[in-house]
Image (cartoon, rainbow, N blue to C red; front, top):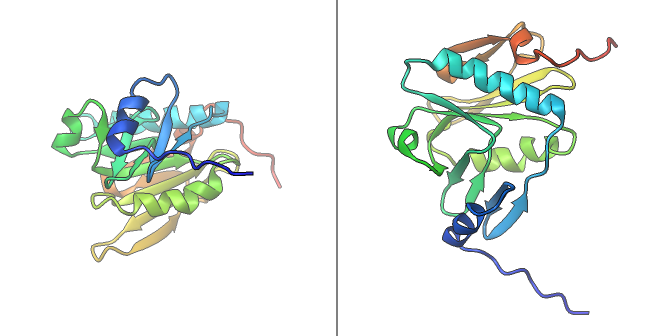
Length: 189
């Protein structure tokens, strides 16, 4: 049996098509990937993070965006971070595609954790402006930050045992109680 390869889309064709779709689709090197619906705890944590970070950014010249905003990486990739912050004047004037996030946060789920930790993080690291990548697991309440230093090296900072999530790139702190508000605590071990 012969299998015909799927045609690859150009970046421009993807944007034209995606902007007409009711669902979200990520794009990488000509291929399109459907974004599936999230669990309630995922949505709650994303909302909490976007709200709390947004409140702390008032008057700063930076903005937090969540889930439905596209981030372009190079000429071949578009991702939908769960939450991101940009302070870039061009980004703050765009209607469709953002290119210069300072901070990206992904809220993990069992279905996406491996991808968010590996391939997606590798793609995000291509963004020159990115200084911090946070992974938040609502099931285990683990919070890890990957931070880029002045030499461009990435280092992990585990905040899982802390009472506070720190987004160092924004000099922003949020209590874990605020991050996980509305999410039941995992059972004690």
